[in-house]
Image 1: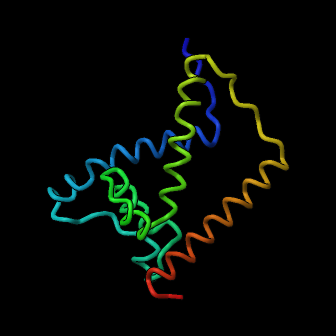
Image 2: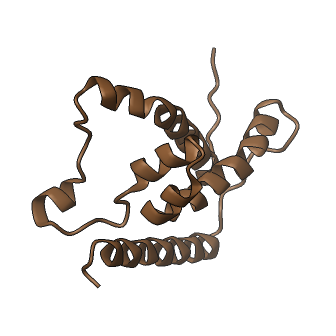
Length: 136
């Protein structure tokens, strides 16, 4: 019988962004073989307005290829998520090896604070994207 433990939010982000980094490392090769047609942001395609996460794929590809300035100019949010992934990865490995205790549930107050921090970060990212595309 396999018992699957639950992962904390930072661990889920680290796992997701690690996978995104792997995809980002081969994304230019995929684009070269598909005629340069990538996935367009649905909000931007429908309304012309960029979403808070516009440029995150481009920034991830830039980070995985060492193009730091391009990543910063496209989506600084990529740096935050990459730092969280890199910082959380050792904890994830240690938890899976049984060296660190399993995560505890967050208190309602901690969840509210985290929700506010995430909302502020997403709002700042959106302001950045709106400025980048000339809306501000």
